[in-house]
Image (tube, rainbow, N blue to C red; front, side, top):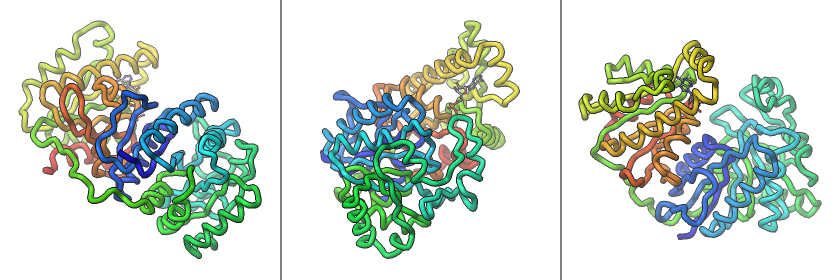
Length: 420
Ligand code: ADP
């Protein structure tokens, strides 16, 4: 098998987002959770593989080491081009990790120039004259200036990136991008000859990103958000008509929710309002040793097999605060993740073939419990929320991994009651 393109995403949600973008571009795409190794098996005939790391906010040397390991693995699968996916808000600090990781990937590949663009026009992220906008505001005027981990108080991408690399940074402006693929290629070459290593391109629309993707086709390393990845994806020829996705067909459907985000709470309320069966897990009882898993399975066995079910630990902010006050934040999270991971294995053993998981951390716990390391990415039910397909020792299943605030309020009912 030979990949057309490999991708390294600096967080799990970003991995799903960029994998969905490659699939929209017509590439048969695999998503791999965590650093792969010799035992990681990819689905057959993939054009693209995305390795989702947790390297956005780790120390720069760790992020570099993990990214280089992922790059080496992607090369063994034939990927001549590696796309480094970071956040469309350029989420980083003067210490990294966008600059150090891009430089390390370029050094390893012997690359002398790369193209960056964090624009994501459907989400209101655009780049003009090297400045990043969030809808109609500069990044530094947007709510992201108050981000809890990495407050973004500057909008100038050349300035932000220059603080993270010792190499030269420059911009290809929108007037050049509008002149098309050849104009961008010429500008890239001119920058490279002038000793510039990081070239940031303006982009206001998906059309601009398609131009940039085509112009970047020959570069060993390209960097940005999901928008440019889609542009690059469109420029790569695919292996041929996509092989049918392995929809598992008959089987039961379930949601496991551990996300306490506002949107997940709405989705839970909508499921309940649709008179579908749901069960709330008592985290405090589990912590005192009650067999909450056994009780949940007994409840599950009594439900109508034709109906999707929801099992959730998710709690309102008040409930969450109360549980955390009693158990501590880390212990509460560990309880929930253990409960939902164990339930996932039991449910799949009992015939669940469509499983929707709500919550980023929760998704990590469930995939680990099921032994899922790589999935094939399928159709999106909502933007950034694709169905994926996995083979596990418990059975083949369709898995939807949703981070907290993703998906429309009716996602749970729509995704699990729609016929395929
Ligand atoms: P999101 O994507 O919305 O951030 P996550 O799954 O990443 O969702 O995070 C939610 C966190 O809240 C998890 O660590 C989970 O274990 C924790 N959690 C969920 N329900 C409860 C609860 N009832 N009490 C305490 N912690 C909870």
